[in-house]
Amino acid sequence: MSDRLSLPKGRIRVLLLEGISDSAVELLAAAGYENVTRVAKALDGPALAEALHGVHLLGIRSRTQLTGAALGAADRLIAVGCFCIGTNQVDLETAARLAIPVFNAPFSNTRSVAELVMGEVVMLLRGIPDRSRSAHQGGWDKSAEGSFEVRGRTLGIVGYGNIGSQLSVLAEAFGMRVIYFDHTTKLPHGNARPCASLGDLLAEADIVTLHVPETSDTVGMIGPAQVARMRTGSILINNARGSLVDLEAVAQALRDRHLLGFAADVFPEEPARNGEPFRSPVQGLHNVILTPHIGGSTQEAQSRIGQEVARKLIDFSDTGATMGAVNFPQVQLPARATGARWIHVHRDTPGMLSRINEAFGRRGLNIAAQYYQTQAELGYVVVESVEARDQAESILAELRALPGTVRARLIYERE
Ligand SMILES: NC(=O)c1ccc[n+]([C@@H]2O[C@H](COP(=O)([O-])OP(=O)(O)OC[C@H]3O[C@@H](n4cnc5c(N)ncnc54)[C@H](O)[C@@H]3O)[C@@H](O)[C@H]2O)c1
Image (cartoon, rainbow, N blue to C red; front, side, top):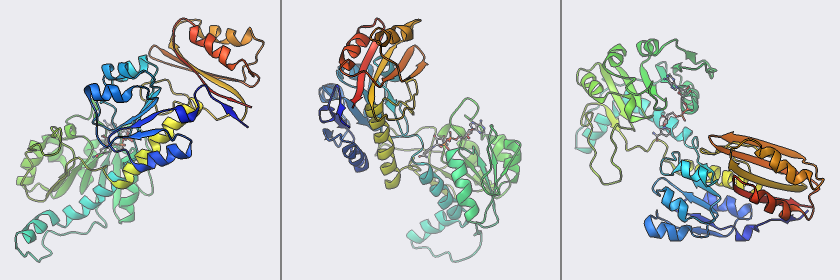
């Protein structure tokens, strides 16, 4: 079997900014993508525009601002991988208009967050933050007063998605009772039990931990009334989004000893970069753990993110698959042993599919498989033919010339 590609892999230029994990480079190399340039930091302005010149696959993390102007300077770009969770740093609409799918790794750090929550549950039930601070300052407070085991306590998980359900398994292994509230029906893991409402969960749990996204329903979901509903001596943990919790209400409940403890990794206002000052109403209070949005930041998560996003870039370049793209029609494709495969991205107008098919029909070629998805005003078609021999390039030229075409590419021709 041999591949003839419109662009051989050695000429596909990959640029990875912001010190992306070695795991990404290893996977790219194993798939034949060795023309890789790595830059340790983020770039912007003219330096970014210059670096993007001639690049086909770009990897960034959260600091590189991929604006419309930067994308406009990228003359050969076919896909962007955000080696992180969010994609706010990319002008997704412009990328879609230019037929550039953008990929990310939304769930690679699930386990890291779940583990941090378990650690915080143990630390807060034992009153460790204050005892540790005291010991650092030369104090010695050896007593069992206010220290409790985790086993047998009830953990209330709000949002039973990727993190919530992973946490559920870890908590049961610690001997905890697990209850959860999710606004959609979720299959319980182990012996976990769903609650009918948030109020029911708050009234029953010894520890409440939040794992919902930020939506119009969840912003401010824990305010003074919800804090009051929590059991006296209970604990609140927010490692999800800063806007979910009214921190003034929590601070008051901690001062009143209604809450035994609190941990937060996320805040309504977070410093934009390291070194900038950070202020919060819960600073300096008894039995509180504050962390600088590092719940998902572990070496393992970085390595998984590297693999997950590199895999998506490779699949797109090798097969045309766009599963997991955040701004693009999603198509899952098998790699085929023989034949040729083209992709065609166009402005979604009536009759486009039949004009694409005509390019094959007129040549008497059978279409072996066709995948078609639209999103917003963008149409994405993948066409395969097993018998296109010697005509692959002329078909590509015809597809490129169709009015409304944004981009067409011959993915492979295999014999
Ligand atoms: N601290 C960090 O570093 C860090 C890292 C990763 C994720 N997060 C945050 O953790 C949160 C959860 O992430 P995930 O990957 O588990 O998300 P997910 O999408 O897998 O799960 C979210 C769950 O919340 C449920 N939900 C949504 N709205 C709800 C509502 N109003 N009431 C009840 N349930 C509701 C959904 O049905 C879903 O089951 C997100 O806010 C994410 O931003 C933080």
